[in-house]
Every structure is written in structure tokens, then in C-alpha cells.
Length: 236
Image 1: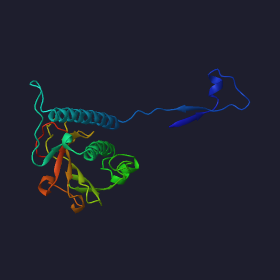
Image 2 (image 1 turned 120 degrees about the vertical axis):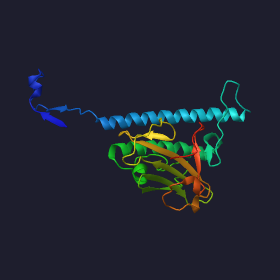
Image 3 (image 1 turned 135 degrees about the horizontal axis):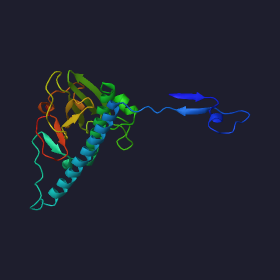
Image 4 (image 1 turned 90 degrees about the vertical axis):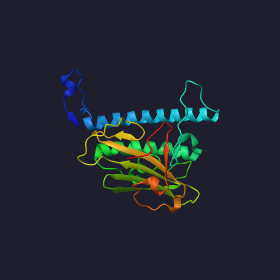
């Protein structure tokens, strides 16, 4: 809020002029606790994603060299419906990073507004993978689907050579006890304290994927994409 107070200059010892200019006083309003919490959770999520990708790169490099030393853990082995970051093609690695960045931004908006943002809203804010990309030429059209506590951001391309991608989000059931799972690649938290089950997926037959909500991706030919750290094969 801004206030213009005439005559302040004279009272604080500043010489008056023939046409004194009003002094503008700015009132600084602190951010709300909810907004501050959302920013903190966003920063934590970005740090965790960076750590997961760093570990994925280390494990991938070790595997290509023929293994790790005796003191290092062996690289994780993915289940049949999972694929690790280091095993993805460069374009799919780029999409993996973009989906995680977009997920964090969508969670931040969900925390502050109470609603999941539409893909067009995220695109207008320049948030990947929803915004135009000068490298990929924005080959994907993203849609939002929601059924109860299930939220999907589905990305499909008209190019039959490209896979489809899915950001899978499951909110807690109303009235359910708090989820004790620690925050990690598959568990994020809103500013309200609600724990989310999240994951990202890829489907090789991108053009054949229906534009509809997907509740059990692994049962419909989707492959879960992981940073490289061992995870449970279940997303719920």
C-alpha cells in the first residue's frame, strides 16, 4: 500500500521549494506463512531433484566403465516397468528434467492457490515442459486430467516417432492419517502439509495414448522414469 504525505519534507528538515514534491512512503507487507512455506518446499524439492540427477549421472558413468569400486554401492537395477535417467536418450533426459521442474512449479501454485494450474497457465509463465522450447519446437500438447485425488499432466505429440509423457500425482484421501514416508523422488509435500505421491512416466506409442486420466500407468504400457536411486515399483 502506498501513501503520499504532503509537507513531510519541511518537517524532516528538507528545504521547501516553490513547488514541493510529495514524499512517497512505501509500506512493506510481509509474505504470508503459507507463501513462505511454499517457497521453502519448492527450494527443498529443487535441491533434492539436483541430488537425484547427480547420483544418476555418477551411477550411469560407473556402469559404463564396467562397475564401481569395492566401496561403492552397485548401480540400482530397474524393474521391467522402470527406466533410469542414465539409460534414457538425451532428448528423454531433457524431458525428465523439464517434467520435474514443471511438477515443482505446479505444486507451488497448488499450495498458494488451492488448485492445480492448467497447462496453459504454466506455459504463459514460461515453465517447462509446458512452455515453448526453442530446441524441441514445442512438439508436445499438454492436458490436465483430474479424477478425485488423481491428477495427471499428460503430454502427447502428433509425431508418431515421439513417446508420450505423464506427470502422475496422487493427493491424500481426505480424512486419511498423515503419510509417514520421507520426502524423496516419489513423495513431495504441499505447504499445507499434505503428502503427495508423484512420479513421471513415458509411453513409446505416443500417438496411440488416449487423452484421458491414467490411474495405473504400469498396467497400460507406461514406463516409470527414475533418477537412478532404488525406489519401490509402486507409485501409491
